[in-house]
Image (cartoon, rainbow over all chains, first blue to last red; front, side, top):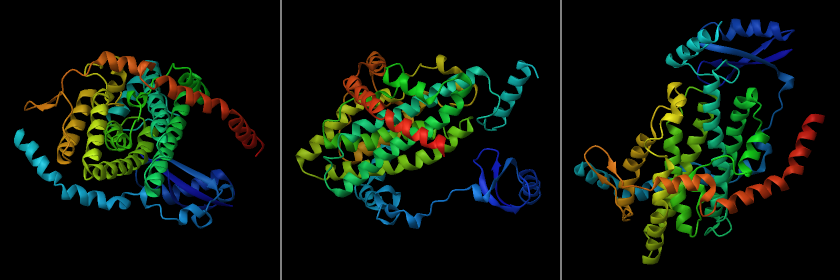
Length: 99
Length: 307
């Protein structure tokens, strides 16, 4: 069976690291430890049978195809331009002088 | 291991900068204080959907409607992310999500003062996204490095989304600021309305003692006043740059800090205890959706149980 392997570093969430082929979950953990846990500060290793993972693909989600730039920082470049035009820097400098 | 040894080991982990995870041993006062903070944040996100939601249908133009809808959707999503963290933290105390929601709709749980106020104009919508989200991102940014790992991790995503909300707010207010005299007046009026609630947002300067476990265990690292000063330092130059007047009494820099007068903390206390101008109406709406959505929650949990 194929197991997908996730490694959890100390302060972060588990990240996908790769996969191993093993007969049991215990064996998968042993292999995963050998291959993905030899170095680096990990606190947990997770193995999940590949066939237990349910997948959604962006290509199958219609809304993912639309222009959704209003959800992204990149959709607001004109706001940065406007701030430059009204010269926020000058206002900050003025505050600096007041201090 | 005795309790004293366990506590010592726990404190040593925090001192080393390690993160506490959901299944880890933790002292009761840590669990309680962290849960209280996290639950308040979740419920503030949930109640924070309501004021702006009132303006989706009235937002000028399709792009503004989409942006405002996306913001409300994000806030609702934040509530779900944070409630999931709260649920794990509350489980050993038998504090379920259901119980937390029941507390909210019964008026027993607190949420941020700013969501107890009305939103009378489109300019208010802009000021909320610009300055209320601006205040929230300062509070939440200060918690990114908190000792509870699951909360810190979801805050990264939340703060990134808040940054887009702030841009959306700046977009609205900069348009109004470059409009005619009536536009600029509506913006000034909205700023004047929100100024005191924004000063209140961070909480009283001396509210330290009851939050002591949060500081002792590395959940919070900056005081209410430090966060408020950071906020003022960031937004006052922006307010001046867009040509707005600072509301009375205008904050003044005394060489070390912003002096902003007495914002009447009794008023803040009354508002967060459910005596704000919109408290009853908003909670009523939340109660209604909780009741009307019951069959959906039951159907979903039934389907999950079958699957």
